[in-house]
Length: 157
Length: 188
Image (cartoon, rainbow over all chains, first blue to last red; front, side, top):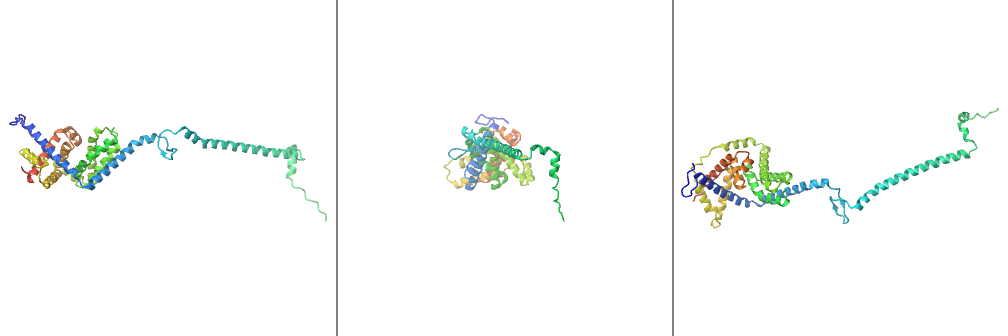
């Protein structure tokens, strides 16, 4: 059915399609005009939905950056700074507690060793200064003597 | 990758039409608002890194899926499928004079000099009502093709049907609207 439309030099089908498109355009324009006059509460809820979506998009964009960022730190103004490299003196400062811990453990070890040496020296000094010679402690008879309770004093009626 | 401004402008440009499309489908303002919000957030969450030019097609698909999800949740899928069966219903559109309706609309909507603005608003409401009354597939094809201004192949891809089906649905929709308006007394 491709007969020419009288007076236009185009086929009847093409003419019908053009007419349909023009009419559809009019309907669509009317719909658009109606959509522009939506009630205020509807437009406000649509605006809220749009803003929620934009917040979500912002979060999704920031997520990969935050994952690879260094931890948060406070700058000189006391403002929390997220991401970016830490300054050199901040990194050095963060090592200070670790250094203090190692130094403290070293001092405690040194103090404990010195205490043991002093205790042994005291024992040695007492042994050497005693009347009993140290070799007596290696004599089995002397050990037995020490374990044996002293004899009861003789009692006479 | 779409910038935040591009995304914002896109959502702003499409939100009212999306709402109306959802209302046509679910016939409930609150549900339609929820559907549009879901679609917007899903677009922002999953596709904000896409180029701005791709957003319209993606958003329409998300909106269609969100609408279908709503029907599933409402457990009225059977009713919906019943409506879908009407899509293939043949219309006797052959003899209807589109030109007459076009001239009528040109006269009543085409110029700002129309004296009766109340009548104009009534015609807008009438068209809105008649669009809502179209069978779902015809309405979807008509709105995507002529309101969202997708071409035939894009509309076919969004609707999951052939280009020929899109043309048929659009033709039937336009004829049905023209007929309904004529029946409501909009004559030259």
